[in-house]
Length: 471
Image (cartoon, rainbow, N blue to C red):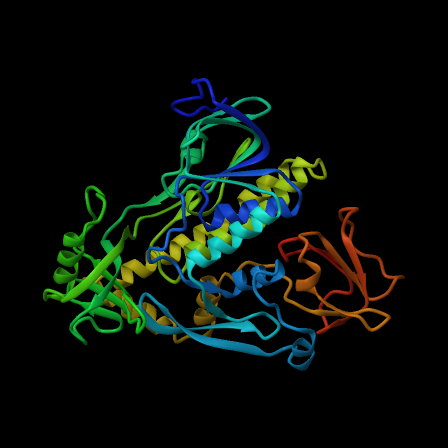
């Protein structure tokens, strides 16, 4: 039996029974809760913060995540007319790798877009609103202080303004960040890449135009990144490659100014500095995301150098992959082994993501320009470029079924994105005489002509949009 360092012992002021406890209410935790509530699973989210975190964080949403968000109605999906008009088209958007403008991210025209800029706080708010509307219980201003795994239940103590709440859950999902209590409670081995640099990010006004160049700017000691904002304070980052910090104190305005001065080589003229965050190129991914009744998602499962929004995107994809599986296990429709499938799938993804961020950090180090130049030269090879672009956008994960239109006998048109809105398996066949692959009895079966043509005759699509089987 696995237990936390401080198992529940105090007398609680109240007790709550639920199916799933989600520890951590950032965007990943809120999305897990929304996915569970969509399946009518009782979910409780415990989050220390009382309100949204609006500090500068990820804002890039990549192609695979956009497709998944569209399938649940968080974003508009492609309409049938557009799919029919351009079924095999491709849309492209320039992007950077290791601060070099060397990538082009592409996505099929039947999907929403290759890239979209959506602030992390806006996503968290949307997921929380959906989770609450579907019946999930969100406990902001509460902190899980103790966790114990028993044979048939997990017991957690959560401290809040209204006293001690004891929560009994069949499963616990740790979406509680890189210092996850859930991860420390269970047996979750990790592959670690030590930090080699340190960075500070914040919102500020640059009072001397041109002193901090817009975009990515290399210097002899590191990099600056400046996103000018005509309507308010800009996001400004100082990346110091002189080495990692021995400790990570709460960032101060004075340190932020000092770090920028060191990287720039001149004291910056700033005002209105706030919303400071600290990060490094430390990388880690858990080699297993399940220990019995404990599961991990998001930064608790994998953390890395925050380039290109890959952490947020990988975490959201964790949530979509986990929610439907947990629901099927809790309702007895599937064996618990499908949670091991979740672990295997997502560990493979996390390994690839952490690996590419480690490479990017090494390329950005001013002391290793030869590595940067060599990788940039390799990216001129189309096959290498395309593989890396798909890795960044999340589209390297095989088996995803892109959107399509099913035209039923009466002329009704339905897109796959629409069919997946309720989070069910979807079986598609051309006519009533064609069998569909074996699958859950509660799968939605749709019959009609498919546009564009597919390599399969009939298919079973998982709730997260990946092919389960084809004929």
